Amino acid sequence: MNYGEKMDRRKFLQITGLVAGCAAVGAGGIAVAENLTRDAMDSIKEIFNRKVVERHGAAGGKDLALRIEAEFQKNLSLLPYLGSEKENRWTAYMPPAAFALSAYRILVPGDMAVDSFAKMFFEAVKEQTQNLSSYLMRLIGTDEGMKANTRLLAERSLLRAYPEDWVMDFVEGNGEYSYGIDVTECAIKKFLDRRGAPELTKYLCLTDYLTSEAVGRGLVRTKTLAEGCAGCDFRYRQGRASYLYPLRNGWPPQFVEPGDRNMLP
Image (tube, helix red, strand yellow):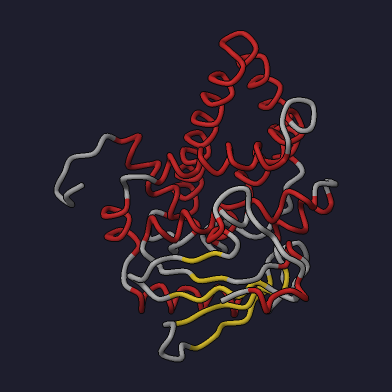
């Protein structure tokens, strides 16, 4: 896509809603931020529900989609407050996590195994981000700008203003990467643990690969809290290929125990 190419409003909102979790919201303010996130969430739901219909047929799929939506509204009301999206841009990740949990509750284990369900959700997010990379690169800004924003996010998290929030330390670059964060507490993991679905978290972590690829952030991560590790090691360098263990092994993911990290390259 050329930068000058015209885009309809829906696609624009889908794109900007996606990067609400990656870049600080500008002068548009909190109301605009919330609208963008809602539109991005609607896009994920639309794609996922289409996949449910493809799997179950029109009648069965529509019934499942209605049940998922009812569950989603319940889980949305249970999301913890982590600050406004203007002050904490990672809050944009919470509604998709609530939707994934809702669909998981309806479809697993009655109809699908967790690996199959996670693959369907992963593919829905992938479809939302495909073919948008060049425009997203323009929207996301420079590596230095993202570094500054991430530093502020980490510093804010260390204040621990909200107990259910993320907590992370900023990591200076070393030549191999431009900057990074070590996440020691994850809001999504806390939410899913509390809702009795800790097994789902490690699959949702894999969608970070899709966001990184879409905006060219060059994320490399080899461990996560969801796999029982002490933290999540996010390392960024704009322009390089993204790498998330265990996606290098394809699907289904080949998760290993923290003690087996010597298996990693």
